[in-house]
Structures are given as structure tokens and as C-alpha cells.
Length: 397
Ligand SMILES: *Cc1c(COP(=O)(O)O)cnc(C)c1O
Image 1 (cartoon, rainbow, N blue to C red):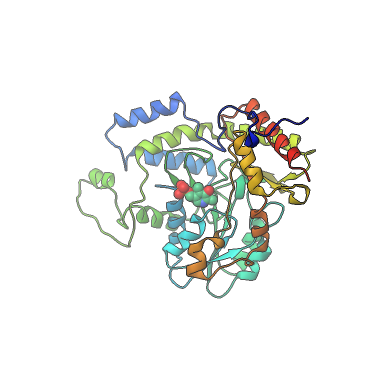
Image 2 (cartoon, rainbow, N blue to C red):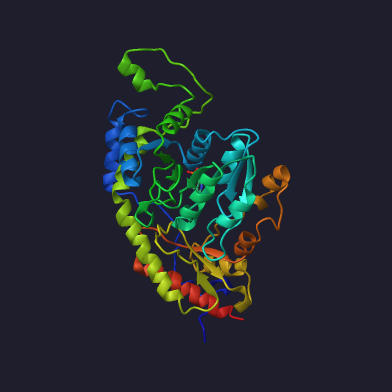
């Protein structure tokens, strides 16, 4: 007699909710933030440069520009790529809305590419078919933390003279062969939101090897003004010039100190997420009714998310039923993502609709993200596995 599901009044697998992700903040992080609070500079100070230096080293790039959040990182990167009104930007359908929104901020049109059905990464063949005379850039998003096929994307981008941009918000800690994420595209954007691989509360970064793009982004994050407060203080000058229209997208020293401290722990955290993913892989290899996403060869996966696809043919339930049943077991499953072109904003303003990206749309009906974060214990992962098996065996067709 199988255990009664919590959704029908049975005992849940866990007594408290296990979230799909959360930050890890230690006493060392708190001490680093405290030290900044006692210093002269709360923003535009030396911790910003230190975070940028250590991040560029981590990503293997010449430059890293800190900004207020991951969306600002995309906005700054797209601006540095020269994207503007009338341009088209090819973006994946299977991503967070900000990947497309940042093109709209600049007056450009996002054009949605479909994904590979096994990895849900942007499909280079779909990208190639969407290039027009108006295309300015291609954006790849390293969905779940697995780097996209940058070799194929690079060939397309170079052949058509397009800028290749990575939305690497999931992928800090990942590698493609021996190349770290952050070094795989012309411009690479990261987020330090608390659910992401490292946290600064809010925070973002763009990496690049191009010195001119780095200068443009430093200006863009500071109102379009060429010098910041500290540079003027050091020069003993009050004079500044606004060269372009910019924003206040600065990241404070308080946040950068947290970032420096967190980044030191990133390699160990990536390793832990990979261990948890391995536990899931092993447990689910024999589970009917679901399959984990495939991992491409040559990839070291950062596992920001662990996504499975339900085999709905083998289940007498849909994804939402399984989602609700797992939540009742106190497993904080989630869904990443509603394909961006299906959001009402894009339907209304860009005429997008069902059928535009059939692979992403089909995947959306059967995906679930399972909890994975550095502080998770083996017991937590065992609970996820037990709940998944409990729920899927109940709903087996
Ligand atoms: C989190 C995320 C963003 C936005 O980052 P914020 O820091 O929340 O602005 C953009 N793209 C992807 C793929 C993300 O996961």
C-alpha cells in the first residue's frame, strides 16, 4: 500500500519547505560587509574595483564591470554592443523575461529562437534561420548552468558580423572544455540575486575582453558620466561631463564586499551542486515518468537549476498536478520558464503567439526545477527523491 500523498491529507515527506534555491551567507561574509560599513566608501569605493578584479580573474577575461543587478548587466551589455532602435536581437524563448526585455529597453526587437529538446539550450539552427539584415546580436542563455554551443554560435555570429552575448546568470562556475563561463561570448552577463550561484542581495556583472566596451559600460552605469565621485575626489576636481545617456546602475561597496567574499567560495559551491545533481541523476535513472535534461559533452555544468521533463504519456496527471503534489510534500519545486514570447506583454506589443517556438512550448508543459543549492544536505536531496518517487508512482498511468 503506497503512502498517502500529502495533497490528499497524508503525512508530507518533510515537515518544512525545502526551497528550490537559497543563498549561503557565513560569518566571513558578514565580517566583510561590516568592514565596509566602517570605511569611508559605501559606493564607488575600492571594493568595487576589488570585486571586478577578482571576478575578471575568475572568468578569465580582461575586464569585468559591476552593475546593480543581472537585468542591468544585460542592459549595459546590449548597449555596449551598439543595439538600438530598429535592430533585431535574437534571444532564446526558454529564458527569464529580462533577456528579451533589455533589448526592448533600447528600442530593439527581440526575435525568439527555439531550443534543443534534450538540453533546452538555444538551438543554433533556429538562430541561423532567424538572422536578417536587421540582426545586431545573438544572445545565448546558459539554461540551468550548462554552457550553450558557443562554437556553433560563434561561427554564425562571425559569419554575419553579429555580437555574441551570453546571459550567463545561471552559469557562474561552469566550463565549456577548459573555458570558464564569462569568457565564452563577446559580452557575458551575471546576476547575484540570492537564488543565483553567488549572492550580493542585488547585483550583476558583465565580463568582456574588449576595452572600449568596458569603458562604455562603466560610463553607462554612472549616468553616462565619464568620471565617478571617487575619481573626482582623487583628482581634486569638481568637473565632469555627461557623454551619453546612462543610468544609475552602480553596485555599492557593501554589495561588492559580499561579492568578493562569496566568490572565494564559488568553486566549492559548484562542486557541491554537482554532487547533488549526481545524486538525482543516479536516483532518477530508473524512475519512470521523468527524465533529467541531457548534458552536452565537454561541459562542466554549474547546476544553478536541476530540471527534469515529465513523461506525461506515462502519467495520469499533468505538470501542475505533479507540481502541487510535490509542494504539498514540502518540496519547493518550481517552473523555469514560461516561454517569454507567450507573456501577454510580448503578444500585445510584438505579435508573438503559440506555435512560434514549438519545442520550448512543449517543454514548458512538462518541466520542473528541483531544489539544488550549496547548503543542501544529502538528507534534503533524499527527501526530494523520495517525494518524487512517491508522487510519480501514485500518478503512474
Ligand atoms: C536572474 C536572471 C536575470 C536577471 O537578474 P536580476 O539580477 O534578477 O536582474 C536575467 N536572466 C536570467 C537567465 C536570470 O536567471
